[in-house]
Image 1 (tube, rainbow, N blue to C red):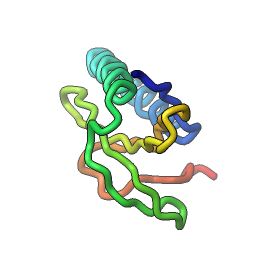
Image 2: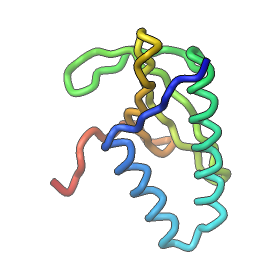
Image 3: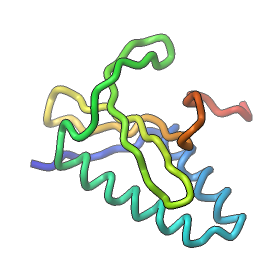
Image 4: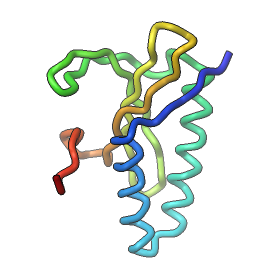
Length: 112
């Protein structure tokens, strides 16, 4: 059974920022590998509920259980946080993305 996968506005904004940044640098192959890895991730997490270990994280003061997925784009890795609701009818939420090696996830837009 596959589930729908939905990206939050924060995840979408952060991923678009990474893609735009590397596209401006002319890293076409890198952007292509990141997009391919993203598509594979969506297929994998929609088909398998427990593909990654669960971790307790604090998101804006609330403790939730999330899962982590590593996107391999060749030169860089990206870490994706996603949440699998207990109800199978609800979609899986892609919460946030960061470059591997960074210490923190950013939960708000720095320009605001």
